[in-house]
Image (cartoon, rainbow, N blue to C red):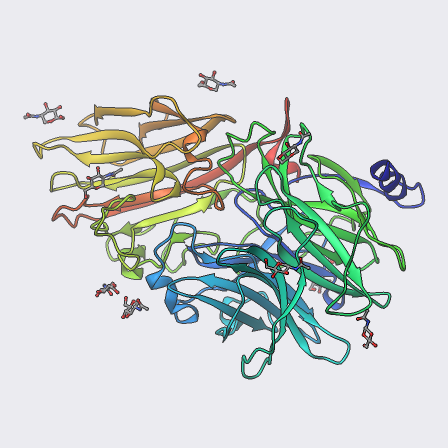
Length: 566
Ligand SMILES: *[C@@H]1O[C@H](CO)[C@@H](O)[C@H](O)[C@H]1NC(C)=O
Ligand SMILES: *[C@@H]1O[C@H](CO)[C@@H](O)[C@H](O)[C@H]1NC(C)=O
Ligand SMILES: *[C@@H]1O[C@H](CO)[C@@H](O)[C@H](O)[C@H]1NC(C)=O
Ligand SMILES: *[C@@H]1O[C@H](CO)[C@@H](O)[C@H](O)[C@H]1NC(C)=O
Ligand SMILES: *[C@@H]1O[C@H](CO)[C@@H](O)[C@H](O)[C@H]1NC(C)=O
Ligand SMILES: *[C@@H]1O[C@H](CO)[C@@H](O)[C@H](O)[C@H]1NC(C)=O
Ligand SMILES: *[C@@H]1O[C@H](CO)[C@@H](O)[C@H](O)[C@H]1NC(C)=O
Ligand SMILES: *[C@@H]1O[C@H](CO)[C@@H](O)[C@H](O)[C@H]1NC(C)=O
Ligand SMILES: *[C@@H]1O[C@H](CO)[C@@H](O)[C@H](O)[C@H]1NC(C)=O
C-alpha cells in the first residue's frame, strides 16, 4: 500500500509534525497555484476568479496556516477590457500558474471572454495592486496555462488544449516574454485515459522533466496524475502508481481533490495544494464551491513524489507560527469583517463584484452620510432579463462565504420612492442562482415590505422559499442578517438597527440552492445589492455596520472546528 508507505515516510519521527486543518483557503478558492520565495521566507498562492472582480487574489503566508490577502493581481479594468463583454457566468479567468524567478512574480492565465486569450501578469511587489503589470497578451491553446523555464532559459507554456471534437490534450509551446509571440505546438501527453486532462504543471528535478496534470474532470472523479521524461517533449513514462492524489471512490468528506500544484518551502519540505469540495460523495451541498487544501509531500532525489491524501485534519512539518506580515492590501483570510465605511476609507480588498462595477454606484461616506456606503441602484436586478448585457454593471457588493457556519449582517437605510425599488442582502452563486432578502416598495407605493425569494435551485429540488411581509413602520434603518445556522440551512432575519434584539427570522433557505447548477466552478459570496427591478427609480441605499464572522468550519462528518483555529 503506497499510501501507508507515504504516510510512514511523512510521519517519520525525525520530522517534527504539527497538525493543521483544511481548507487553508476556505470559501471559493479553486485551482490553487503557489510559489515559495526563499529570500522572503514567504509562500504566495493565487486562485481562479472567473468573472468576479477584482480577481486573481494573491495570498501570502509565512507558516502555511495563516494567509493574508497581499493583493489582487487583476485590479483595474484596463488590464482586461474583455471582461466588459464576457457573457457567461462561468467565463473569464481560468486556472492560473504562479511562479517566482530572479525577483519577479509571473502569473499566467487563460481568459475566456469574447475570445480565449492568454494573459501574463508580472510584478516585483506582490503586496501592491498597482505594482501588477498590465498583461502580456498571447495566443493561448485552451485553458490552464503553466509557465516553465527550461535549462537554456527558454520559456514554455503548457496548457490543456480542447480540440473541438477530440477532448483535451496537453500541449506545449514557447513564449517570448518581450513580444508575446508563441512557438510551434508540441503534443505532450493525453494523460492516463481519464476525462479532461488539464491543469498541467511542469517541474525540472534530478535531470527529469515532470509533468503533473489533473484528470477525471473537476467533479467526483477528480484526480492528479504524473509522468516524467528525460526530454521536455517526452516520450512520457506515467507514474506506475497514478493517481498521485485523489479522493475519488472514497467516502471522505473532502471530495473532488485534484488540480494540484507543488512547491518546496524554506526548510526543503515539499507541499501540494489542490482544490477540494467539502460535500462527501453525496456532492449536493457545497455553497463554498471548490476550496484550497494543503497536503504534505515527499520527493526524494530521483524518485516520484508522494502526497499525503487530503483530510480535514492533517499533520505535516509546518514552519513555526508566524503572522508577521505587516504589508499588503487586504486582511487575513480568517479575520472577521467589522467594516464601518469611515470617511476616507476604501472598499476592502477582499470585496468582490460580479464583473466590473460602475464605481460611481459605490461611494464610501458621501457628503451628508458619514460612515456609510452609498449604493445607487442598478436598473437590472441580480438576475437581469434577456436584455441584460455584461457591461450593465450590477449594484452588488460581496465577500466570500469562507465558513460553514457564519453570521453576516449589515444595516440598510433605504427610503424607496418608486414601486419595486429594492435594497437587500443575498447569497449569490450566479445571476441564475441566488437567495435574496430585499426591502422593497410595494405596488401601491405606500409601504415597504420584506421580500424573500430565490432565483434558480441548483442541487435543491424542494420548494423554493418565498415570503413577503410588511416592514414595521417604526423601523428606520434596518439590520438584515444571513446566518448559516447549520451546514445545510441559511436563516434570513431582520431587526430595527436601533434595537437589534428585536430579531425576527423571515425565512430559511437550503444551501443546495446555491450549490452546483449554473455555478459549478464558482462558490457563493454573501453581500448587499440595490436595484430598481427595471423601474424608473434611483433612490440610493446607505449601508453601514457591515459585519461577517465565521462560527465554525465543518472538516468532517460530525466534526466542526472553530473558525479561528486555522
Ligand atoms: C466590448 O464592449 C465595448 C463597450 O462596452 C464595445 O465598445 C466593444 O465593441 C465590445 N467588443 C466586443 C468584441 O464585443
Ligand atoms: C492525444 O490526443 C490527440 C487529440 O485527441 C490526438 O491527436 C493524439 O494522437 C493523442 N496522442 C496520443 C499519444 O494518444
Ligand atoms: C470510482 O469513481 C469514478 C468517478 O466518480 C466512478 O466513475 C466509478 O464508478 C467509481 N468506481 C467505483 C468502484 O466506485
Ligand atoms: C532526448 O533528447 C536528446 C537530445 O536532447 C536526444 O538525443 C534523444 O534522442 C531524445 N530521446 C528521446 C527518447 O526522444
Ligand atoms: C516582522 O517583520 C519585519 C519586516 O520583515 C521585521 O523587521 C521584524 O523584525 C519582524 N518581527 C518579528 C517579531 O519577527
Ligand atoms: C454595452 O455593450 C453593448 C454591446 O457591446 C453596447 O451596445 C452598449 O453601448 C454598451 N453599454 C455601455 C454602457 O457601455
Ligand atoms: C399597500 O401594500 C402593502 C403590501 O402589499 C399592504 O400591506 C398595505 O395595506 C397596502 N396599503 C394600501 C393603502 O393599500
Ligand atoms: C438545520 O437548521 C434548520 C433550521 O433550524 C433545521 O430545520 C434543520 O433540521 C437543521 N438541519 C440539521 C441537519 O441540523
Ligand atoms: C428581476 O427583474 C425582472 C424585471 O426586470 C423580473 O421579471 C424578475 O422577476 C426579477 N427577478 C428577481 C429574482 O429579482
